[in-house]
Image 1: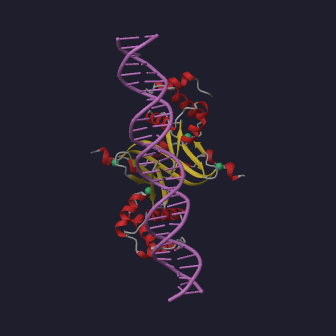
Image 2: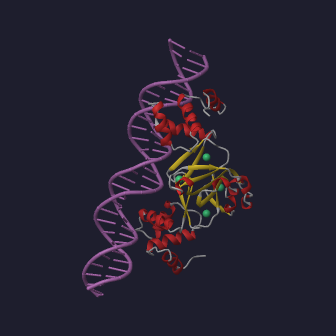
Length: 138
Length: 138
DNA sequence: TTCAAAATTATAATCATTACAAATATAAAA
DNA sequence: TTTTATATTTGTAATGATTATAATTTTGAA
Ligand SMILES: [Mn+2]
Ligand SMILES: [Mn+2]
Ligand SMILES: [Zn+2]
Ligand SMILES: [Zn+2]
């Protein structure tokens, strides 16, 4: 469901990010589009609402959101960076045919390899590639 | 141990890749450097042996190796593509401090999420990020 | 209202990758 | 061996995503 303006404000304020108009709109966009959009998708869609929006602002905002751990970067494909508002651990499946990225639940914490006992781990990622059902049965 | 010239030739021939001088040298480099080198590392190091080598050839060769499933691409960081001659499934740990990428064993096949029952999966990737022991205790 | 700091914008710079055409090497045919 | 067609390599230009920079605008406190 659509997050309220106050929810968005609060989310930024508690992370010490000044809630400018652009930042609120970008956060709102990410929450309404948990489908892992690219910078271009965010920019093109929001430009309809904010005609003066600059792509620099989208980049700047996403960087500050990342530093505040408000979004995660997904780099499955080289030269196709995507952003995910869902920050808790989950896996991704990318369809090579339609390009869609699906979420799936996965217990990544069970995977703590013994070989990495001396390592400090603060980020775990899992992604699969293949063909999604929509593309398979079409 | 160093693969023989015949081993390298054979590896290419069985995959229907014509064993040119450059291709053999690039394959040899990948086998002797399983540390996930970048295009630049491969190019700079091999240029000492082959002064006429072109970066285009490195790109072309890596692409044909990928299509023949002789190497795997590793895209942990955006704008830092790395290549792995070890193609069987294993996990990667990238140290944010020194940049090194470590291999670790992981049973990725155990992770077949039920949500993905209708999906055709042909590639599974796991990578962690953090700080390696060398950097931690220094 | 004034003013300094922060954010946004437009533009240029950077850099990895890809595209392309010319030069070279390879291997089969004559 | 020489000829010839094809594949590969090379150098250079084009592309495209991201970053850097400086000017403009917005914000919020004094
Ligand atoms: Mn996701
Ligand atoms: Mn590896
Ligand atoms: Zn699909
Ligand atoms: Zn390290």
